[in-house]
Image (cartoon, rainbow, N blue to C red):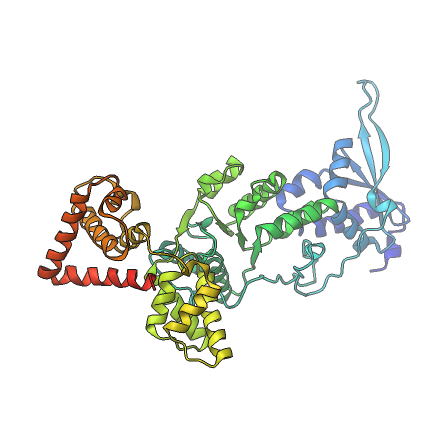
Length: 490
């Protein structure tokens, strides 16, 4: 286009230039924003590559300059050339019904300083530097910028071990990956303790979504990075670019949402992004260390939206799941570890998945460096050095928790003075094992169950021994629990 054709001071040329600008602006703001802030603007003059726009008020002028200065600057330069600049004419009320409104001319920010140059190319955005996180303006004739999803390709459903601790969340994630944004699980909020597999699960959803829907844009970002990006864009007066960028995403995965609690302005911005995505049928996936109801300090309007979809908890992996996780890790690393060693690690490392994997890596490293076979003795030595949770004395509390875990009984129910058969049986077994594997007195054991006396403990132990002699299935269960205690006490 020959830019000299605009050097004619006529209203029609000004309108023509502004229409071309509006064509670009429409592709970069939502329709409501366009109607509110750009439709009322009129082009009134075009002189020497300076386009003068008439706006309804001082407030209108200030809003455009504060929120859309970069978009306007880039657009003007694209239409009018590198020398293109912008001025405003503000309609001022005269204060008298007999006088016409006056007007005053105000320079645009592009008049005194050039807008930042943008290289509109088909390339991935670089996420290491927040300065590069900008709205990928969809200029007609050019491809939309590709978005790096920031996903770890190793986090998939295939290597995400399913168990009672995560079954609901995993099932919901599979449904979302098949039909993102169209299920009732929008948003999906996955919550649970540190190292329990939240990040693996939500990234698996992202990877599966990309596999099934390659045309959808998927983005994983931590809440910490999101906050830092927002702060950086605020300093550079680019909040509008920041919001618009995130509004382009089809599947947004935001990790550790609880970090938003002290960041009230970030919550405001995320509220706007959330609404836009949800109303547009886009999928939102969030993780938190605590349930949304416990996010004290989070804005109520956000909490209410978190409840729109599914809140799914992930619990600490139980013994069986920990064994499966270890076996999965062994297959990935090409390791062979004896079953008794696997059980030993699974019993003793109960805090989180990361420590489980760390224990396997430490064990393999020691075996390789010392040229020794992996056996139980080596495992015990390695665990003492690398996994602090393995070094503990078996206590009545440990046994109580093992029995509760085995029978899926809440810990407080075990201590309650109830006569429910399943609780009574679990309590009797716990007392029997406490007597067998600890040095506690009968009186002390009884006190650990809410104040039972020593005669109750004696009766419980005798009952367990009698049932072992008469009930084969009961004996099998007891021996299995006893093996857990023995392994944990090694």
